[in-house]
Length: 249
Image (cartoon, rainbow, N blue to C red; front, side, top):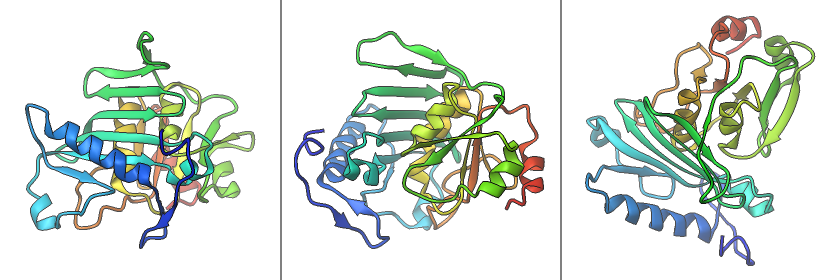
């Protein structure tokens, strides 16, 4: 937040995504904090050098971190960026923390313990739940990326759906707290972009599915790029069938 409140430089990484001093400072703080825990696990993070698959493939548990998710929103100063910290166990996110530093909204979840939301530091924790598909449904959409083809969304949700643009992993959290219904992501994301918020959404009763209807999983191979996916709140709907009917994938 100290960087956010001042003038800052923006670098462009090899993948054309932006990088600021806040990304690097958050990386150092998080890595140092995780290293102080009683059980030290391997760490995969957007702002750290990635180990080869031959080493990662044997991991059963590790941390998966995005120290600043939504750097484009950070640069725009619209507040819609997050810090994402997840624990992955056997390819599944079993613990997740999503912090929105500007508003101080904090979402946390752990396998079997539910999903929880604290609006401000010191406030009581609120247990959150995804909702049944609303009428009309609300689709959370990316603030800075494409992928919300109108025709596809109409086939998926019907003609009357509403679009709610939002940055970073906050889209998952919007579904988890029952304020939106789906988030369709076309195009690439990285594993650290989704894991923490996926845990929050799953513990709230929702799901994150690839376009074949299978749960999104992690540490699948050399690439850390996710398949395209659909995050949903109402798991009582046959989303795989709906995606097929909508022409997905």
